[in-house]
Amino acid sequence: MTQGSPARLIFSFAMPMILGNVIQQLYSMVDSAVVGRFVGKSALAAVGATTSVLSLMICIIVGLTMGECILTAQSYGAGDEDRVKTIAGTSIYVACGLMVFLFTIGFIIVRPVLTLLKTPEDVLEQARIYLLINTCTSVAPIFYNLTSNIMRALGDSKSPLYSLISSSLLNIVLDLLFVCVFHWDVAGVAWATAIAQFCSVFVNLYVIKKKHPILHITKKNMKLRPDIVREIIRVGVPMSLQNAVASFGALGVQRFVNTYGTDAMAAYTAAGKLDQISLFPLNSLGMAVSTFVGQNYGKGDYKRIRQGVRAGIVQAILWGAGLMVVILLFGGPLTTLFVSAKETEVIYIAKEYLGTVAKCYWLCGIMYVMMNAFRGMGNMRLSTIAACLDPIGKLLFAAVFSYAFSRPGLWYGWPCGWLLALLPLATVWIIKWRKQN
Image 1 (cartoon, one colour):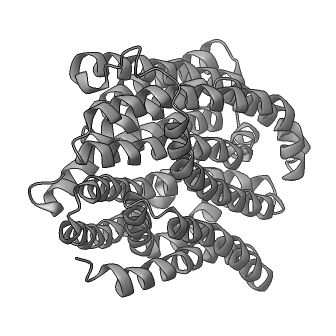
Image 2: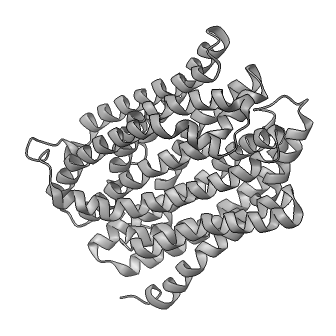
Image 3: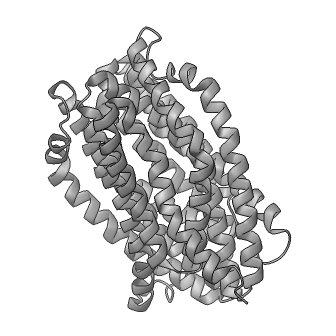
């Protein structure tokens, strides 16, 4: 990342991540498709009712593991291989602590949270089962993200893709087996996802053993280093906080959606899956910029950082425009992957949602690039402020517009949140970093 064309490096690094994130989303997408097509729209609504809560859990996991990723990228760019090993060893302790935390609270918060979200009684029990299984098996996504992010910090974004391909194929097979053959319904897709995620962890560990000797940690590297823990927490906790606020914003929006009934919940679930897949290229582009900036920041090459950010913004606009066209043309038909074509009201609401947010994907892409650029430089204060403004703005504007225009107004909260988050990032970049030597 410290030599060669910034635009080419960012693009080539982001592509495997884009494919990987899309494939990772297939876990929940296949879950939704299988229960929606083979169990019914109530089961689909149950899975959808847990989406925001599960996103909160994953966001906490990704935040802490991304903290480790940024520290690794900076140390690797500075040529400090011993520190890379030490960060990897200490990260295992952080991951184990996070696993215990999520496992414990999973038993405590499941039903109260679903009740707070006004989940309808006809889907409450199925949603509870699905959410409980996911929280109790959180060790799999924790160690998948830990191993994947540390490889990406070294510039290897292809290996995590291979593990996801294998586990996603397994997930599809198990989903169909557990639901269509064993008739385990919602619990079946939850267990299928957990088993597939464990598979991805084992593949990652095998790749690290064969391909990345710099990550072959010794007993010396496995000593608990409080200073490294503090560094991981310093970088990772703000990112987890950012993601947590985003998830709380999504919980608030989910609560609004739930008030419009099961059809709206099912539509929001189906359209939300398509929306998440559409945003993954933009998010992956931002993560590629973060690694690029992190390595060059460790080297002290600020001119190259500016070149990389400019290249990232251009690619974000192009990706956003392309994704907008695809969603506007095919969003409606793709919704039938999750529900029967006879569910016309569900499909109509899904198209209503996608037709609003897709037109501003380019704006979301620029926000991701700028936010991750500041993360790569270790400026967690500004990135935290921006990341919190996004869901807060989304929730506030969704409330205002839904009050003024009923259900269709909900979806205008998305572009308003993206714009609100981008404003402080762009302001600081123009004032401080545009001419930084």
